Length: 481
Image (cartoon, rainbow, N blue to C red; front, side):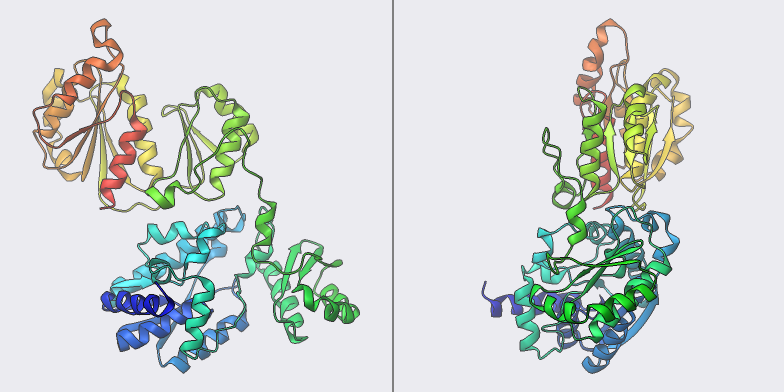
């Protein structure tokens, strides 16, 4: 499509929403979304701007002014990223936690006010950079119309000129926390230092500025062709930034570039090719299968996956592997019964309850793999263990719980009959997991697998032997429908 066709597609898409809240930062991307939404939806659009110490005051004031110029209703919400230790600790997934806070508030506001969707300014050019915050778009069903019609940054600027928006040539401005290296704690004091330093430099007439904060040292980025101007003002710049609390003031000879802090992320492990885009593509991130891998390999792959996804899961880890990996990744958690390593917090629960049912207590390790995986993937999980068919009264006594669940994962070894019985009692999807529990003729789970595949009860899906992880992934995808 040419630019006019993309613009028309954008108009058609936004018009189809009926009403919308626009996450409005005041940058060129969200300005184009807001302007087109105003033209297509009229008064059924609301601009909402987040305000907190992580956003520069000059950007906040510019957003208010532009919303007024566009004649759009505009509201301010106060976000509390700095109350979340997952954000304050500044991991590579920092932006994800920020967007969770923002989009959580916006989706709640949309439900309360009766708006059909929440829109943001993510575009096609964003997919080529490290953008962990994009994961939150999917979690909260936020729509990105610029991305959906394939508009790039340069095309968006051209549309902004066509719409006569003052932001057409406005430089990109990320939040102030992006000036801190990963792992450096985010504090209000550091954010104020950065904001005041950049405000001073913008006041000298620079078109683009970043002041990267390394505790006592400031690393200044300006466009290469503006470096002579900075050197001409070096005494004033050094004096001002030292007054703000920096001991050393440096100029980055590489010049301004977006996302330069990402250059410090560890390079991918040479022995593996982690599929860091799988969550964006398929809805669920790649997990690490631990058997056959050294602790160093497990840690390296988990670390690489964590640059673009959270949480990261590693399955079938032995206690010995877990202890060694924990020494390499301090934030990893070992769920011993599930034999799972997790890095990062669980996703916010959405959808209905996933009920994990086992025939016997020997099936619990596989059931726990399913339960912990489902929980970390963003499901509400309940457990109902040891209700096998050898004592049918145990199962029948819980018919209300069975029917209250949205999805049931039924784990059984031995004869493998339980999933068929459960499926005959409920009108919900049943995911059957055969386990390798049993005596000789069970053939390490093959007997249970064949029984489940031959179930006469409709609505039973079957995963591989002992595959609690796969059952949880399937339940997650069903729960998101």
